[in-house]
Image (cartoon, rainbow, N blue to C red):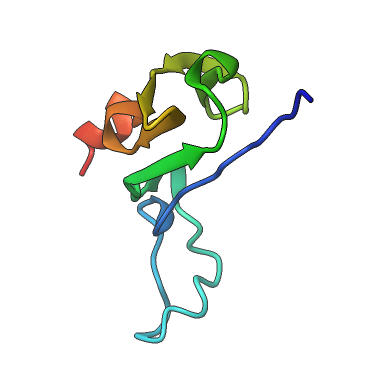
Amino acid sequence: MPGRIVAVLTGEAVNTNMRWKSPERNSVGRDWGEPPSLIEVVPAEVRLPVPPKRVRAWALDERGQRAEPVSVAEENGQALLQLGPPHQDPLVRDRR
């Protein structure tokens, strides 16, 4: 049976030049910053209990559209996806 999954993995996310008003980081007031948003990429392995030939995966762009394919490996007959920094936007990576 076909199915679809959207996995969103992120750590901290902030706008460029965003300023927190307190050490507790619970308010930015009007200092929301500006584009681009900067995200911490979280590496992960995702195993699916199906053969890899049944799986297709893509990294998504900032609009949620398919940007680039993610390779699907095989481990013990199951699909294995390696997610993380290789699929990070190079502009965000260069601004750290």
